[in-house]
Length: 149
Image 1 (cartoon, rainbow, N blue to C red):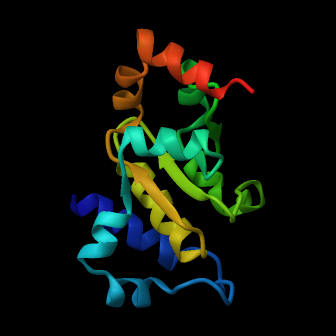
Image 2: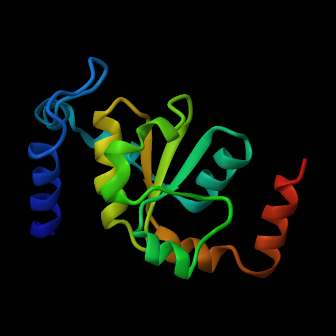
């Protein structure tokens, strides 16, 4: 866990020289961090899929390209974590942004970064491995059928 926070802090200290006016600083984010934010930053599979089906969420897989090429979900956009600052224009600010990776470590770094950039963002608690387990058989079929116009 120490490595996670050290990496997160480094990302913000070495990041873009100036944040947009609508962005928070990391210091201010920490000052207002509370139990509500701790809860709101997370999202479960069913809530994420429901928001996605309603057009209210964009899901971003922040894994490296090689990981994404090896296995992926057709409805999830890939923006690797190390490319995120340069690809913000591909993210819809009007939607809730859900960041995902196999577990949640990189997704949480991406979520924090996006939050500081002014996005409403959450990370998938169960990770992509949990999503793969959830979307099997009948659930996968139902999800895809629900997405058809």
